[in-house]
Image (cartoon, rainbow, N blue to C red):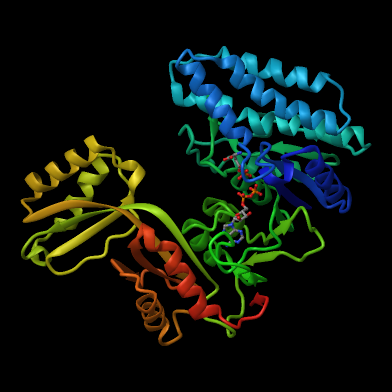
Length: 456
Ligand SMILES: Nc1ncnc2c1ncn2[C@@H]1O[C@H](COP(=O)(O)OP(=O)(O)O)[C@@H](O)[C@H]1O
Ligand SMILES: N[C@@H](CC(=O)OP(=O)(O)O)C(=O)O
């Protein structure tokens, strides 16, 4: 059995959904089909998920929900017409949305989750309906009925271990199951969404649950490339990569596959294949446990923006037992997660996602660190990007860091931070945000110039 997930671009229009049906019908092993909400039809378009967030926010601020609701219904109506489906399905979708808008708004985050998850839920119903109209033996399945239980963290759900047992029962299905991505239910029956882009996570959880032979992730590019194609022109295609290479690269900015989606597939050793809905004949990228890496020590270069550094200096920090624990305790008290902690003798920098630091939070953290840890200096610097060079071959190849730093020097990019060693497969370079694209291009040129069309 294969689990096939189709991303927002693959289900953005009737034309795209017809391609999805062809792909599903072409292989009888494709028994579980996970779908996203309709995504962008062009770069200027708006994803249905974003239209739904707007709708939820209008409702919460007692604004004009009718226009916002119309914009969502119009997307489904266009799709239904293009697929030759009757008006019933659109009426069902509109009624569903109106019903959701009546739910309790006292917990705004849960209310937003309920509205935004309707994008996937209604699309799955519509696509199941379309498959049936083609004579395919297909059914829509709701995540609650399937037992996809998750933690009650709105917009940030994590799968609960018992979900896998429930989902394993789907392995016997005779029908093609059309399953909405992006959300599950808490044990108390509350709908909770995964982080944005989380339909990839649903697909991986299902693939692990049924122990699929393959998890296919259909998107709008022929493969994972060695660098973001929006930054580097015609980057080389990656044929094979390991779970940990993909996890590091997607964490660091390869938005083609969600970084949290690797873990369920990895634990059950389910191979993942990233493929193109617009060109299914192309072999795509296989993500597997191990690969040979004699061709190039590096497999990809990614960059992600929006990081801040809390810089702390205290003379004799190295001798103060418990300093690191106390510093991290302050972050824990304030519910802040961090990404890296490069340290010197008398200094340490805590790098964290900037979106966690409101001005009030920043002022409170600085005050607490200064007063409770009696430091000589503490301040926050903003707008950093983390550039990550990733490859299984890096740890036993001499000179990767030297090549990387020399390439950045030639491109006149100042390196603010280097973190190497904790991960065997990556090197992280902190640079100013405005230098990030230049850094990626310089590193790509250094490691991939003349590499041909594909790597590994
Ligand atoms: N290294 C990369 N390789 C391939 N695509 C990438 C990479 N980095 C970023 N992307 C972007 O990811 C996009 C696909 O992801 P996404 O838009 O989330 O697709 P979907 O709608 O299928 O979920 C591609 O169109 C491409 O612009
Ligand atoms: N629709 C959700 C979940 C998702 O995975 O979408 P996509 O497949 O378009 O990345 C989002 O936009 O976040």
